[in-house]
Image 1 (cartoon, protein in one colour):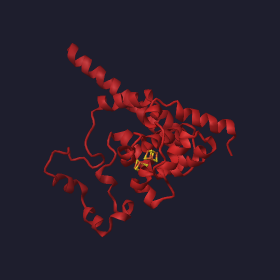
Image 2: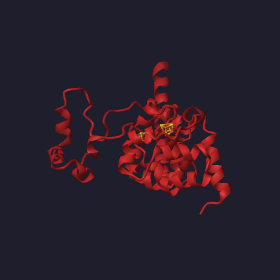
Image 3: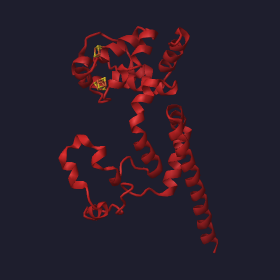
Image 4: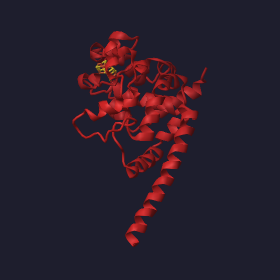
Length: 230
Ligand code: SF4
Ligand code: SF4
């Protein structure tokens, strides 16, 4: 169990986020946000409650809401469009989630674990999804029609009229320069640090991959320079 000082530190991180004052402007307690929130219909979750907790600065209950409740939000922002006070409960939840990741909350690890495969794909290919990920075992919720994509993926890709570069392990090929620039952005903005906090094993795999790509890019640049000099 966290100490009161730790809970206060978590709240300070939420409150000091540069978006906080734009997303929270007071609360009438009118309940419009909760009435229109899709997640509130299905889960033990209420955007009004989140706003009230933050507005009253109840650090213990804020900490408690970060264990489960905040992960129910669908980030649809219906609440932000409806609130007469121009609050954004969905935006506040986004800040709370980022702080939960920063502090290595178990709730964040549990929620993000299933996305590890997508994260690996995104960082190694620049695409979130690829044809070779569409396997019946991975999408039981798609029902029996998923069987239609079983077969020769390469042939199916060639049947698509638009240019797809015919790849199956990525949706399209991303230029190495773009990939290397993205790695720098993820590094500078703390995304890779967050990943390390959430899943050290996945981070190690991705770090090795990034090192290899950077070396490959350095060799490519050298080749280009040699060509120009020739
Ligand atoms: S709609 Fe706005 S003012 Fe009304 S309860 Fe929700 S956050 Fe508060
Ligand atoms: S952003 Fe989250 S809190 Fe707001 S309406 Fe959508 S699901 Fe509800």
